[in-house]
Image (cartoon, rainbow, N blue to C red):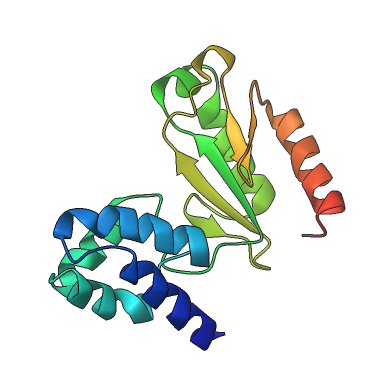
Length: 158
């Protein structure tokens, strides 16, 4: 699988000049194509933008959006912004952690689910909100969370 990833990263970098202000757009494009930023390519990305490996690694690890590992088959993001917190997102996040058996930024043991925080989905009036594989859901209670996860498990064969 490495060879296709090598080509994708190389082709993606070729679309961006070596200007350092293009690092973020290039990282987004790589993650959109591959699903994550392969750590084996951080050196090449750094060389392309005339940056140190540490600088590129710092950008990747600073932003919650970027992943250094392949994503789980199903990514659950729970909004952690203030409006959602005021409407029960803390309890929802705790329930999700117990239900899935992993903490925020974690994966289930079988790799089927990843649980990630997200900061504002724009549904403040309908909070708490979450996404499951980028599908957005509002007014999510623990019971609704369980139903959504059960639905994903049966329809997507996670």
